[in-house]
Length: 369
Ligand SMILES: Cc1ncc(COP(=O)(O)O)c(C=O)c1O
Image (cartoon, rainbow, N blue to C red; front, side, top):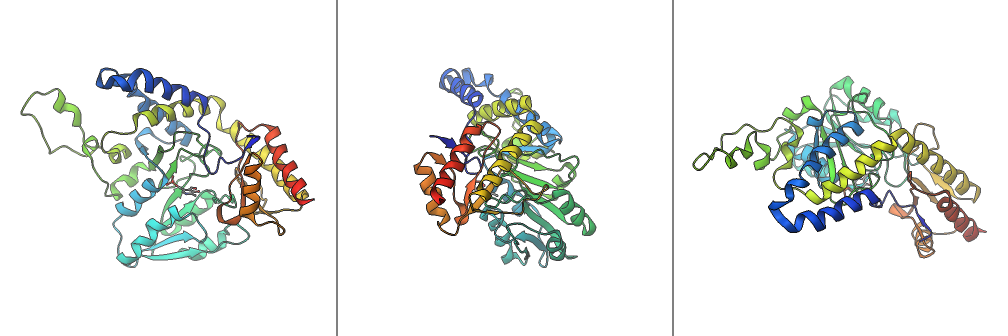
């Protein structure tokens, strides 16, 4: 492989995660309950690191298998009333549309924000919000064009009418910094398998502390205070009248992906060492080079090249070559990109070498000359 530029599709599991998971696989899991206690603390470490990454409280973090599960918790958890409206975004990834569309049969209406030039305009978002808007369901970064919305502006619009904001952050978390203290979204979900370079099947759900009572959440046995006391109090002490845990972890239910969280804790620790500003700076530098090089090669780069809307994704097309075919040719040549929605999607990360960007630009220029 000459170049890996598909972090928007699937991240590459980082070496510290591989090492930690390998050790858990060989030294811990084959010994069952005799050794499992060694790796249970990984979830606590991952939760603390995730809270630091998102600049929120540990009580606001829950681990879920993927973005979809987190978004579905909000769709299932709010007490929808007929006539409630949800603002959704045209051309958004289906994972952030299906849960809301399913609510139509309960009398909920969807209000669509149109896509223009690969992005969304604040005026259009404002126009989609009415007094009946309960929720704005937005993706931080568009999966194909890479357009990043202004979450602060969206939160400010939502605050005018008291609407809630739910963010799909799978295309930004791990590439761009986000402070949930400064940016007051209510809910956020993101799989860790893309920009966080964590194990597929791990992800995060954030629920702002004072929003937790708004959600009717599933409650597995881990979701109750004192659930573990049955192991210490002796026979005949099983109690079922326990109080639900009053943190986002309530949704975690029962036994979880212990191995996955060992990997996630390792990858989050590495990111914390590097620092999100350094990560985002490098991503910006590489995507800037890609954007310039692709335009020079005659490609149309999608999404406005605005200083505030850039992300880790550069999507491009060329009139002479269909996007899907173009992407496939690049992959065959050892340059890993993807092609959602017919756009060639190039997505470098902090760890991407300059030579990988060069390889892509050379291949595209050659193909088009
Ligand atoms: C914006 C967006 N949301 C959601 C998903 C998928 O989410 P999940 O983690 O549920 O697989 C993707 C995957 O490409 C995506 O780009």
